[in-house]
Image 1: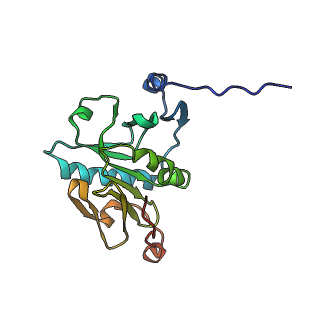
Image 2 (image 1 turned 180 degrees about the vertical axis):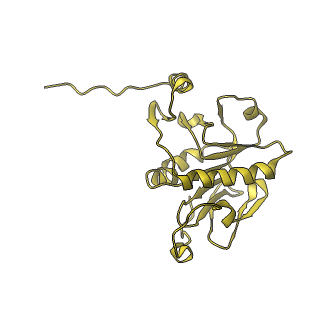
Length: 203
């Protein structure tokens, strides 16, 4: 009878050292390393559209916008992720070359393979970041944006946006028509009929 092979456990230092020379991107969670897959045209286009809008909006301020290739560290969960987009206004983050740890806003563009994790465990981990004020989930199809916003008492409240509406990101005093996030994205027919607003708030 063969013995079960022990699972390899990595330290955060192991992960950072390996990631520096890796040809692909990986995420790290509590000693385990996970390879990341590629993104679709719609995924990349939506991310870039939001990044350009936010970069122009915060220009001249102390906030900076980062996309896909910048790691986000959540020390309390022993985790490193690559959010699709993050905005940080913390001076300590500006001086950190490899990863950021004090985001004001994090956005993820959902895909079939990541949506459950992005909505569930990842969001639970992100909520451990005291600096985080808004967590934004963007569907590739149909046109739908969900913004989870931290309330005055620390509770997370959901605001959903659909076609014809303006997306409000209160943490950055930002507003834009949802259609600008989907510019150049090919959407299915009857998008307005497909969209339904989520019903539940996050705890």
